[in-house]
Length: 312
Image 1 (tube, helix red, strand yellow):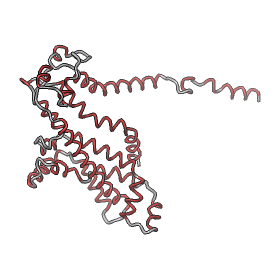
Image 2 (cartoon, one colour):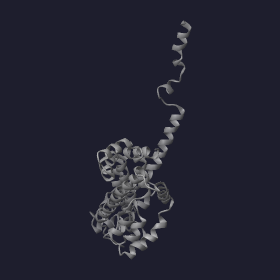
Image 3 (cartoon, helix red, strand yellow):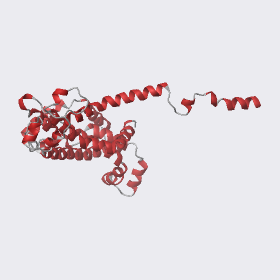
């Protein structure tokens, strides 16, 4: 017995100390090194944008390989926000042209907000119908809807443009929003996966209390699904915010021009063919700021909801 006890007590000491305590191992160190490299590669374009935005446009070309801002200045941000005078803008390599940044920002917020509200609302209704209601051909219709995910969006741009033109909605907010306002296959699929996981006993209890489908949806299903609905809203908002080609086709006038299209126009306003790179990078950073703030605030919720809905 004494021999057995000695073996039992000696067994843990034969294990690798680092592996038992969760310490560094060669595989773990290699994984962390790869992760750090990937993070640096991902963040480098953002750093280079910031470095260029904080540089002086007149001297930027003389030190193009510098890792630090060349002749540090906030002039590019002042030009984009309309705070610099014509003389100040031209002295730092700017175009001197007026940039209606706040108008473009308002248009982007309005268009992205309307598209998000419509897609989330109608997508949730459709997802509830596919997940909780029984009707003939439901699975077939859902399969056909999912096949739309495989159609490249570029294929629908021209027919949608012709439709908006015939309806007289070119260069209007309605023309920018309508093709994306109703549900998308991704929104329906995303919410349907979560609705399938909700206990049917809760829904049946609501039926016994006299609740119909509409009341059950708004009083039971929606309050229980705030997490995935919020995640979907964020994803759709970011996608609508970054949309470029459709606003370029339909919203060419300044009154309805979105920020992504305005960045392209801003690049075109260059003296003697020399782009105002600091101004363009500053405008790009400001345009990306709302999306970055959303991800910083709700990034963990987005990852959790996507993982939960994706594996159901």
